[in-house]
Image (cartoon, rainbow, N blue to C red; front, top):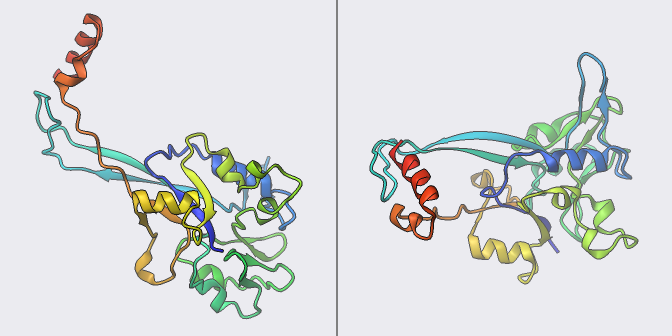
Length: 243
């Protein structure tokens, strides 16, 4: 078994619902919690297992959409990239841990931290290229995404709810959870259909979590766009195209 996430950047809108749900579930979870520091004070802070990073993608400034009369319409797009522990197959955070506190479970591939053995040396944090580990300043131990291991195996929950909190909270269904060793699982099927992209795959860590390859943009002719529209709607479309 190789549990992990498949993330669709085409549908992620950067709403941070996944990060907030993760924070809420793990705030007082059985796995040790994600504490807040001075939450209502002048300098609030805390640990987060999941963060969203935004990047601006510049396109070809000479691109002209098909059927449009104007030219030189530059493309730009904001890419929202959720980042958390990738639960790598070759997890160097585990390799560098001097106390064995960081470990990868053989039964499902989830990477966890034993707080009773962690001494807060930060070696694992330095070894992680994804910035997925954060030190709990209160306890002096390292914290990270657990794939909500305490939730996904909870037999008291309905089977549909035995998923990481971030997956359940995503309003655009950009996050999917499953077993990559099972070709019939949803994540395996999505990766096969869309193609998977590994974050910093050239480092050789073999991340389990994957980002789905972007879909090809639809080519819509302006003439086809006008078909079936009312006169008022056609006039609005024409004004947009003439800008």
